[in-house]
Image (cartoon, rainbow over all chains, first blue to last red; front, side, top):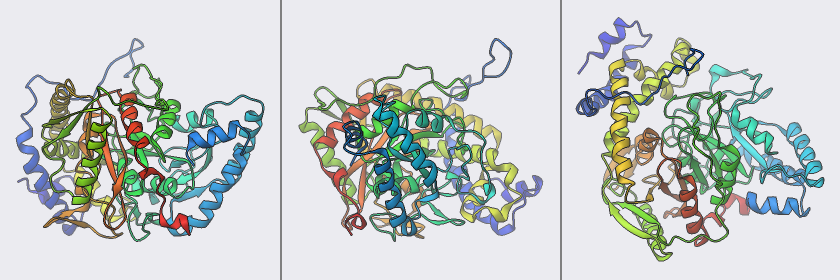
Amino acid sequence: MPNWKQIAQARNLPMTPEEIDRAAVVLDDLEAAFAPLRELAPFDSEPAVSFSVGREGGAQ
Amino acid sequence: MTILEAAARLRARQVSSRELTQQCLEQIERHNPALNAFLVITTEQALAAADQADRELAAGVPRSLLHGIPIGLKDVFCTKGIPTTAGSKLFTGHVPDYDSAVTEKLAEAGAVLVGKTHMHELAYGVTSSNPHFGAVRNPWDPNCVPGGSSGGSGAAVASAMCYMAMGSDTGGSIRIPAAFCNTVGLKPTFGRVSRRGVMPLDFSLDHMGPLTRSVRDAALCLDVLAGQDPLDDSSSAEAVDPYLPAESVSLKGIRIGVPDNFYFDGVDPAVQASVRKMVQLAAGLGADVEVIQVPDIQAMNTTARVILLSEAASVMERFLDRREEIGEEVRIMLDQGRFIPATDYINAQRVRRVFRAQFAELFRKIDVIFTPSTPTAAQPIGQKTVRIGDRDEDFRLATTRFLRAINLLGYPALSMPCGFDARKMPLGLQIIAPPFAERRMLDVAAALEDATDFHHQVPPLMKQ
């Protein structure tokens, strides 16, 4: 599992050690559950959020 | 009385909009101190709007079936000149100078806004027990939660404080209060109702929809709300159907899928029995019931949570140094989102397409899916876990277990009353349909509603 305390420190997150411990319980579970799903999508698949450029050049 | 009934009486001049509005304002005065369903009550504006509606109706120019009908808006919908706080201390004093697209559409339809409904802080939770502005209470048992995050909307509609209240649904927040308060809650297809001017929680999971006292009321609201909004990037150009079901609806030939995996595991026996009875009822009305296997819903919930935590943290990150102004429960979830790597968020959005393809395949052989809305009825305020069978489960995760994945898909779904548990607390049936098949979903729900009387039951406090 990632070292959540080190990540919090590196990112300078304003969390107390107790808050990091509480977050870590959920993050550990989520990490374990999501790990096998990461490679479910085909290698060349796009994310399900869209970005397109209109004729005027602005993002749509 | 439903909106359809009230609209008929308004047109027949048997009642005025002012009278309907005054009745709702009296209900608010009577029950809001105990239920805490409204954060803001707009008495003067409401009566002025009602008088205008009466003048227009008298002139024979009804704008819609909502013309002259008192409604509420969850406090995430921006309202020009009226405070909009998303139930958060961070937005105390925030008075928008513009209306949300939904606010605009409802005003154009002639609906009468009686106030802004209370909610879970920042729409980020399922109880509506707000640490800053108090808990919303369930009209069926004020010691219990009404569900959330649109809890004020559910409580207000169930206690006749208004005929319809808008909600937002990121992982069940319309369908949970609908199930817990014995109302109908409709989450349309993603992009069907504009999100412009709604205080966001999650860009790719937020859906807007009505809570009402009947299926047809939800349908006629969608008639007003649906349509493309060129100012909302996620708004769909898909053609809008007429949504209101006919007076009599046949289920002959409708193919109803009933999962034999996941959705009936770990549920209260009363929930199981009530939903099974609705399946039998549908079969008796002519529907073809097919047992189906649904894709891995738990994996979909996990994927949705990665997206939920990431997007919510990105929306709210700028406020996270004002930690004392954010309740602990929400602050912890916002903090969690800041730990998720960008690669996980993007991979979750890629995996999302895989699940959508699996569901598209599933819907080739069925028209709708029936499931419980929630594994249990509403639980007491303050209770963080719920006991189901011999297991204690986190209340938030349990309550969203059958709902969150549908936000990942963006498919339409509704919750409708289907019975009561041993404590006489309401239970909900969830009906899921493929994208933009709201009309079919509402037809099925209307047929079931016509054959039952759960939606006619009112909370004990209404009988006092």
